[in-house]
Each structure stands twice: as structure tokens, then as C-alpha cells.
Image (cartoon, rainbow, N blue to C red; front, side):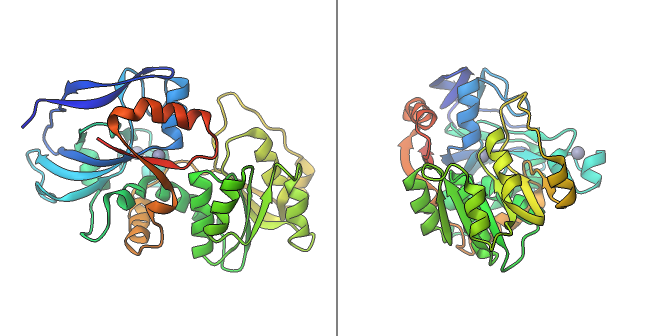
Length: 346
Ligand SMILES: [Zn+2]
Ligand SMILES: [Zn+2]
């Protein structure tokens, strides 16, 4: 067993290095996974750009959180997994005992345990995540497909919280990997999808993912008006904001029908504020929701969707790179909007 491995260490703002570090030691209940693939994620790019994430990571630290791989060692007391198994592990696990966990809001757990370090040859999966949020991968499911489980679980939960039904019209603002997953899932749920994005490549991808109508914000400065026109003047039943920008939060509120639901899915920069039209919210009975993160229930449900082949990595991952190129990949993702995910092979 090696004692050193290559791993990406985040040192701060736009500063990371792929360098030799010690292979993590595992303790009781932990497992050690040989990472077969790690996927880049918008959150990682954000962390790279800002140099930290208040809840998830404080540098210097190994990072990356979407991964699948093989178990190469198990800690004492691990009975549900064995060496050699292919697994996918979520990036967090709840405590199961706090106020929020007891109410089924494990995503808001007061002691949510986060795990980072997917951009490395090996990652330690701590006991709590092994116990509550790690799953064996079926032999016919690829590592890349399996590694999508974390973002998919967030999106799936967001969609179900929004409460859409077959036949509903849903507007999706923002067509990055997350927005595209919303398009794909909303189609699976039988909704009519209006996809709203800036770049032609994004709109093309949304179309390929099944979107029924496309609105280019490069051509249309006020997409809410177009959404109304496409819905008999009413507005969409639901709108999902998957950008993380106060302006697009406003758009979302402006495009839903009376009694409709808005989901502010995209987190805005710290200290952002929005001012909303109170009479619109009140007299039109608009429900405003926001969805953050995932729960073990949705991780399992997302994995089922992946096992059914309803969501495939090839629709969301368009580049493959060795770990050594991670810095360049992060810089590229930071400077090019409209990118998809990159599969990193450590
Ligand atoms: Zn992610
Ligand atoms: Zn808890």
C-alpha cells in the first residue's frame, strides 16, 4: 500500500497545486476509496475563484466532492462494504439527531459533515458518510454516471420541492449543468419546459435534453414577457432560477402565473439582496421557495434514476482530463461560461 499520493490542494483564491501528499489514514468505520473519476462542479469553480466556502471547505485543503471509485481498504467495524467494491459516496452526511434532522430536513442539519478531496488518487470516506450516504454501484453503471449522483440529488430535491405535475409548464433560467439537469428531469416528470439561457450552445443542449421552448436572453431582454406569451398570457406554473444572480431571481418571480411557485435554486454572492413586489407576491399568491443541498433520501432516489439510464453523464460531461491538468481545467471553467462538467482521472 502506497503512503504517498497525488492530490489537488487548494491554497486560496485561484491557487491550487497538484502535489504529493500522504494517503489519508482511515479509522474505525471509515473506508478508503481509489478515486476512478471526479467530476468538476460549479461549486468547485466558485470555491476556486473565491478561495473558500463558508460551509464546505477552509484552505489549505484537498478538494473536489463528486466521485466514484473502488474500495481499497476498510476500517474496523465496516460490515456493509468490502474491499474491491465499486462505490459512490455523497459529499456529506447528516447527524440524524438534531432539530432539523428529526424533521426530515437533513440538508439543513446543524452538524452536517462535509467531505472533500475527490481530486486525488485516494479519498477517505468518514464513518458517518459510509454508514449513511455511500452506495455500491451496479456493475453495468459507469463510474462517471454514478458520480453524477450528488448534483442530481440536489436537482431532484429542488424539482420535487417545487411541486410540479405532469402537464405543468416550467420555466428554467440558467442552462449550466444544473439547469440542464432540471430540463432533463422536468421532461422525465412530464412537464412542458421553457429553457432560458444566454448562449446558443446552452440552448442547443437544452433542446437536446428535451426543452419544448427556448428563450435566448441575448435576443430577449425580458424573458418573462415571452414566457407569458407562451402560456396564454398567464405565466408558467413554476420557475426555477439556476443561475445565482439577483436579476434572474427577479425574472423568476415575474414569469410565474398566479398561484405559481418560484424556486430560487441558484445561490447568489454573499450579501446579495433582492427587493420583490409585495402586491404581486400577495395578490397573485406566489410561493417562493429555495432549495439547498440534498438528503440521503434524494441521493438514493437520484441513484435509482441513474441506474435506470434516465440521466447519463455524457449529457453533462464534455471533457476528460488527468488530475495533473486540474489547475488549467479550473481556470478554463472559470473564464468560460456555458461550460459543462469535466471528468478528472486521478
Ligand atoms: Zn457538486
Ligand atoms: Zn442533524
